[in-house]
Each structure stands twice: as C-alpha cells, then as structure tokens.
Image (tube, helix red, strand yellow):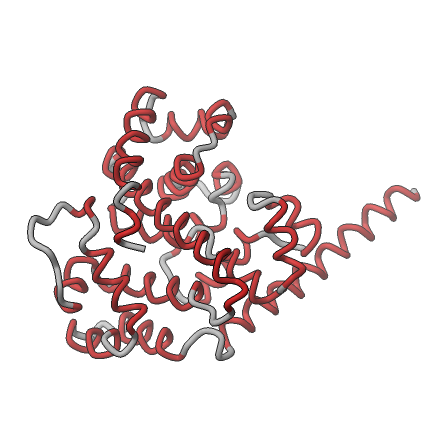
Length: 288
C-alpha cells in the first residue's frame, strides 16, 4: 500500500512538472524572445493568397533568416548547377513550408545571450547535419519528400534551445552532462526536449508528421503505439539523428533494426549513405 501511494505521488509530481514545463515553453513562443518577424513570416507562409514577393519582402528585412534561406537553397544535395543568389529564387526552390521552418529555427537558435553562443552554435550545426542526413535517407527510401525530411531533421532538437530559454542554468547543467537523455530530462523537468519541441512545433502550426518526428525522434516505436499511420518521417528523423551523431552502438538496438527494415535499408546501405553524409558534412560550414 505504501509503495502504491509513493508511486502515485511520484506520478503526480511528474505530471505537475510537465504542466509547468509546457507552460514555460508556450510562454517562450508568446514573448519577445521569439522575434515578431518570425510570426509575420509564418502568417504569410500560411496564407494561401500569398505570393513569393510577399515572403521575400519580409525575409530581406532579417539578415539571419535571409542568409540561411539562400545558403540552404544552395546546399549541394539540391543539385543545382547555377548558384542561387536571390531570396525569391531561394523561396521558389525551397517552398513556403521549408522557409517557415528555417524562420522558426533561426529565431529560436539566435538567442541574444553571448554565454549561450557555443551551445546554441553546436546545436544548430548538429541540426543542419541531421537535416542533410534526413534528405539522403528520404531519397533512398522514396517514402517522403526531401523537403519534409529536411524540415524534420532541422527541427528535431528544437526543444533543446527552447528548454535552455525556459529553464536557464538548470537545463544547461543537464544538457552539458548528458546531451541525449530524454529520460533524465523527464525525471528532472517533467518532459523531454522531444516533447518540448513538439509542443512548440504544434503551436507554430507545422505539419503533423513533422511534429510527430520531433516528438519521437529518439524512439519511433512510441509513435507506433499511438497511431496506425506509416511513421516514415519519424523513422527517418530517428535514423538521421543516429547517423549525424555517429552513435554506432545504436545500430545494434532493436529500435534501429526495425527502422532499417521499415526503410528497406540493410546495414551495407546505411554505411554507404553514411559515407555520402560525411562528404556532405565536410561542406556544411558554408551553409551554417
């Protein structure tokens, strides 16, 4: 009986922590830490009556977003022989949905706190690498578009900078000691960076599959328990994260074996794609 009460108390404490964390994450989305420019870009991108010129006028007013939009459109995996120099060309190449995702990620990662520059810079680099890996996996599997894959890969860890903003030093201590421990995050804060990122992405009205990829990028099997839909994008985000972090031990897990099978990949295919990814990664500094 005592153990039951203790377990109930623990579960209730975690529930309250989760509610508090979600409130803080949603507050980050509302207040000035997320620039109003991002909100305007999202509004224009979501308006079916908007034209490329409407989005271009907004983006050219924010140098950080503009530079990333143009840089990503010139990324080697898009395969264009001519260099794209204008924002309007970049928007046509990437599409409104990806531009919106870049605006979201740029706003969240560009927090004006010098002491966080190193952590956020490393997170952005990893996110971009994961996006590249996602595109390679999407191309190989043919199950999702490269745009959807890039967006999911780019935003999979967006919960981390959000938690840094929402929790400050408390989260930084955890992040510095163990950058990939959703279980530890849940125990300490009531929720993980994956959940936090999904809450934020949902609030930003990103595609449902992208939200789910963010939510389950550490464990695609969790998504399978919630729906009968084909979680191809979830699996791609998971495997791209494994590839980008170089965690070879993860390849021996049941989760990874099931993911490779679902994407019609054998270990030899994965190794070939990893070599291709490493070649792309060597060019990544030009795009970050």
